[in-house]
Length: 128
Length: 128
Image (cartoon, rainbow over all chains, first blue to last red; front, side):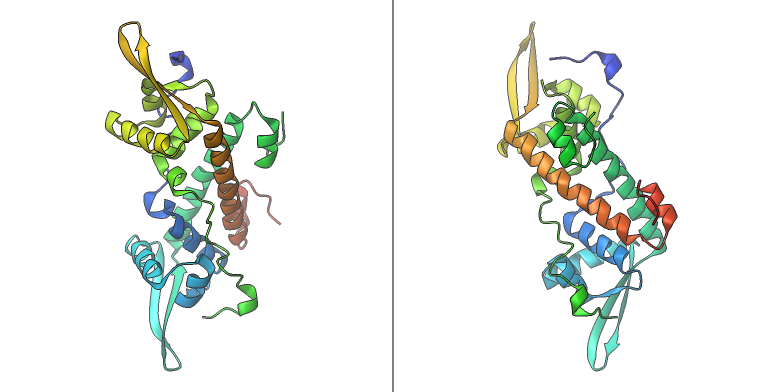
């Protein structure tokens, strides 16, 4: 079926603001963890909070660091090497921008599910 | 810095429910469009709504169809080939499950930004 063109604003559902660096599932967990801990988190803490392997965590930390979203500090705690990560100011701002788009997407999808009030309630929206 | 272990439930921020088939940015747009149009949308309509090229749209439609999230009907409208897509019942359910996790993520991140009431207001949460 075809839609009347008046109902079709260009790319209404393109969600251009969903920054691909941030949108990756593991990186979303990392950024949310770091948002919750503004003083920073150790490699070990991030690994546990996000349920990642050493290899995956290293790879995603590198991507976030290269993009300027996080700062990584390598040092020692006693005799043991200790890596600490924290969100940069720009990282925090970009993550918040991203979250605004994500929230819009959840709202769009919940509104789209209008035929079924149970689905709306499930997504925290009040049935009309 | 290290966190007290009592504050560290295992993989609190792993977001395992973020189904990778659904989580891809273009596919999120496609699923939201189809949720808004339960009778289905043509290839041309989806292309316009999601701002995708023919190649990208075909590729993502194939992934969603292989995963059982959408049905694709190929036919003719007059003399011209016409492809129509609609969300399957299972696809609708899986997308709603995904959205529940996504909503939790937005809520977690908004709560994590607790130091700054302006950020909370921006994400639609009332400052404490």
